[in-house]
Each structure stands twice: as structure tokens, then as C-alpha cells.
Image (cartoon, rainbow, N blue to C red; front, side):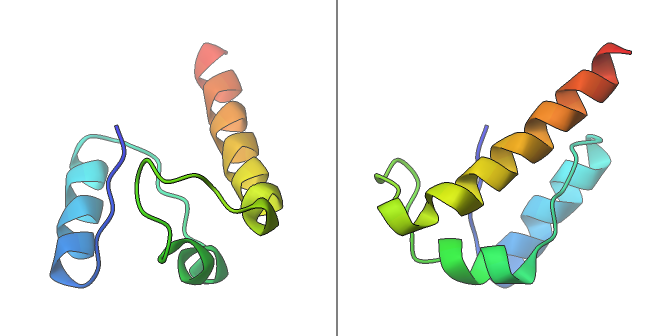
Length: 67
């Protein structure tokens, strides 16, 4: 599941995530970069490294949940 929002919508997304024990990655610089990319839109080449960092975060969470 993915979600995207600003302001009140973003606050509600965070509340739902916290209520459901969904990990939240907080990175203001990442938010600034990704806020102009729409869901299901192709990721621009210059964002590959940033997206790889997000995948690494998810991978680490997955490994921790397996232990």
C-alpha cells in the first residue's frame, strides 16, 4: 500500500500508519525531492539513489521482522 498527501492528508496518513504499526521513514530532504513525483509515475533517473535508500530501509525492516 502506498499513500501520498500534504498537510492534513499527510497527518491523517501518519496517524493511520502509527495506529497500524506501519514503520514511518522520516526524511525531510527525501520528502522535498519526492513530493513532485506522482504515484505510479516513472521515477526520474536522478532519484534512483534516493529510492534505493528507501528500499534498503524496507529491506532492513523486513529482515528485522523475520528474526
